[in-house]
Amino acid sequence: MSERASRRQFVRHAAALSILAASRTVDAEPQRRGAVDEFSVTAPASIEVNGRPLAAFDPRDHAHVRFGALEYRSGLVLTSRYPGFGGLSGIRLDAKGERFIAISDKGGWFTGRIVYSGRAMTGLADVEAAPLLGPDGRPITARGWFDSESIALDGSVVYIGLERVNQVLRYDFAEGFTRARGEVVAMPPAVKRLPFNKGLEALVVVPKGLPLAGTLIAISERGLDEKGNLIAFLVGGPSPGQFSVRRTENFDISDAVILPSGDLLVLERKFSLVSGVGIRIRRVALKDIAPGALVDGPSIFDAGLSEEIDNMEGIDAHVTDEGDTVLTLVSDDNFSLIQRTLLLQFTLVK
Image (cartoon, rainbow, N blue to C red; front, side):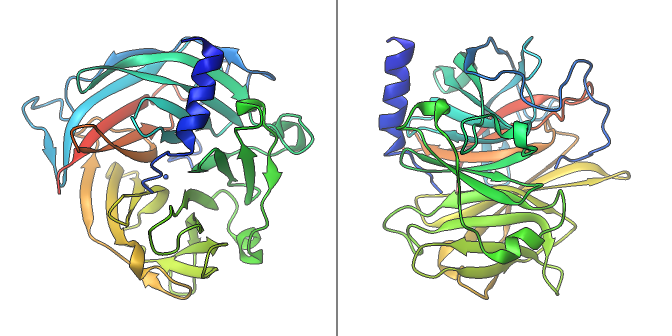
């Protein structure tokens, strides 16, 4: 299949994408030599990305595959000689879990295909880097917009959250794929009051057939209400408004995804000089979300530095032909010499 036909196929798939639902941990991390403050290309360009397999999620015990409600499937350590590769803050897959759109917090797209052998990821193919374009057709970094931290899909429409300026851009991939121009989405005034560098970190669009269908849910990383809980917004849909997600154990939000069951999975991470990096996934019932609500849910997955994690910032879900619900997680390496870009997949077993 030609590259152009492959892109057309992705746009067609996007109409049926399972948005099964879809800060860096240490801002002071040393930057990788040669890293830039904005995306490295001004037009789409093919790049090579290498994937080194991770044989186990628990490097001490390769037979250990069950972690809470998740079962490890496979993982890759991604590297590239392209200087702008890294900073991956969100990822969305097609219904087969193959074609992907990822965003870099430097203001860029990465698109391509995950290659599998059986159920295990073995690498990436057809990878292309492209700048996020603003309404004027120029890269968004030209106007000082960056920190593209969150991504949501609604058919061929892609929403991107820009954290530090607390704005959302809408792209229609049917109009030029990654050459599409972003349109600014009207957001509630309270979005602009979110803290600098702790703003919108997770976006999901609720699909048809579920409560709040058609709503864009936007969750802040660490914008706190008067009771210290995380501020979130319902934009559009049947019941627009603001709600809160209970904050516990100093975890911050890094992404979210909606499952076919109607549950919202919230990916969280924390950092401490004492305990290091930790991540977890909480399960929240979508039916509990409403304007003024305070929602909470149990943790279904916890991991720390004894497992193969990094600064995990993106999560998505798809269902295999065998009926397995697969979660895909990606990390933001902060363009740091001591961090990694990880792509991990787990089966949700309960």
